[in-house]
Length: 290
Image (cartoon, rainbow, N blue to C red; front, side, top):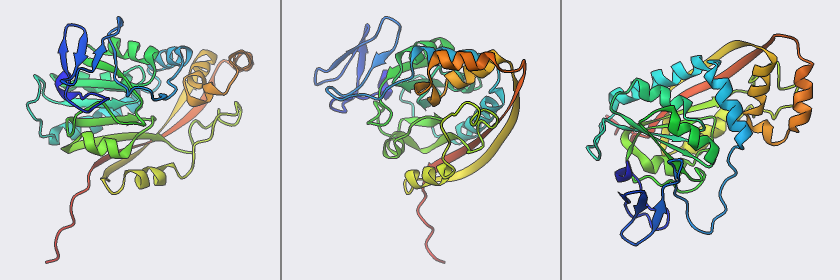
């Protein structure tokens, strides 16, 4: 997938030789022993990626299938987008999916499973997450970078961009998305996760999150399809711990205090989850008046 990448220093195309990616200007990037590569501009403080314990909690929770309904919805949107993709023969692949803030690669792997010959690039600031993403599917490449900043992807090379409850840079998404490509965004609603947010003093989800999403992506991208997804989960204390420990609130909660509060939970806790899954495409010029 090196043919789809660009140098984070100068923007030139990258080529691969052995375990090194390099550009014509001489900038070189070594492949880590675990298999990912860091493509970030020099002398710039990067985003704080998820900690190893947060990544482990996410892997435990997702592997148990609690968000399988969300994964199914994402796959359905991705397959619909793939059906409309006009794939350029840049590499020996039917298409490319770029996952911004991919985490463990759970959703990217689910989509690739239903897209034979497509490949995926997982972008994340967390090295522990990228190590798991590489194991999620054999057609995933993993790149450490700050998705708030310039993406190390060449112009118009992504046929599908996934963005599941993760940061996004609208201008960069519009740049890397192919003309007929699709962006699939998943955002939690203010009702997520009902039943836990108050009891555990979790970070609130902004009620205006959807409006801000549209304002951020406009005018480059426009919504073409939107689906609200809600489902109830019956979780045991270990599941509740994983759900809380994998989210952004984990940055602010004391792990020992959280563990003690989890021990006081009943054998089963019902949690309502609520998401919006929305597909965006490049904004089309307005049709001239008849």
